Image 1: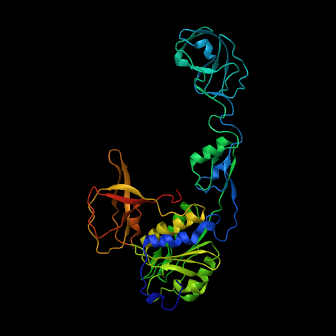
Image 2: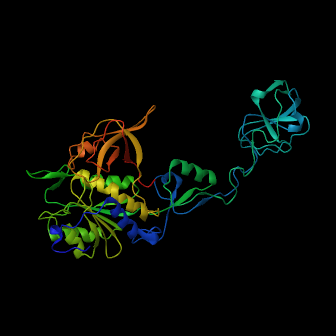
Image 3: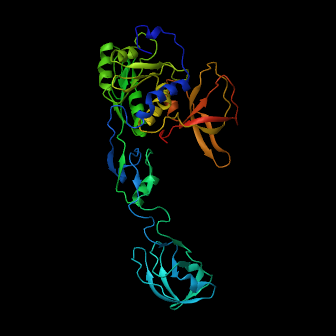
Length: 427
């Protein structure tokens, strides 16, 4: 689909959400999963303390075996299992090995060495007896329970071997990954560059929060909201400020936006007399793939590809519509650009805690909702007190989107429904 003078009067068929995801998957393709559009296949090297939330770009491999030596898994005594084949054995205690020691003091026949958890196993020992299973009489150790070879010992390389990959891209780095990288000996991680996303709110009626507002104007909230959402997702958003409803202003802002791999215009995408965004992008070489999705809220959403391969999204101007459009379409596309296989937003099953009456509009709906875990009943959900697409205050209470694939049907308390968690969409 390309922009033309009759855009706002084209009564084209709305595509389904699934068809829209198909367009995104096709645009990504196998080659797009290697690098973001306009970016070289490069990586940032960051210290472990700054890696959380970034996308891993290179494998992390072990610089040594893990464990790097045979080590004790319990506080107790390193012994020879042959000396402790039955309860009642008595051994001479000769020394102590602590965690961090080299563990060179050998254990001979009839001997035992005190040992702490994590300490290296002394030469000659092949088992560790727990303190609880012993009694000491001066420097004599009494064994209360028979011991077996390798008891309470983690053998060298029993977890992983030198050179094994412990983290493999792509993955979103979490604290558990940082722990694994540090244990593997990595001080820094190679991560994907953050993808720059230009955000351009449009409309003569918009005024920045904190500025004087005339009658007929509203505070602009989409730029800050979407930049916050994109930043949570690991992108590098750039709020370019409001474009006015003129071809000149839109072209100026959109020219700047197309310097980023991803550009998002908010507002001006419907069929009003000042909905000029599609044509302005078209004049700059954007080839539209779709405009209009059978979804509520957010029907006028659009997606196209720029002259240099940029991903371009047009979102409705109502705050909830713009937010839902970002969750449904922009974030999954970014996931693909970060190197993951394309996938729609993750859905979870939840029990509905209220009745929901049928809606006359049959478009699939994604309703701001609250979800929580109940110890007895599992994941539960209910819609927020939400007053429509222009209500950011109801959206502020949401931590999920409740999916209504057939909104003309009556949903009843106890029905199983699907929700999209409003958490990091890379996972």
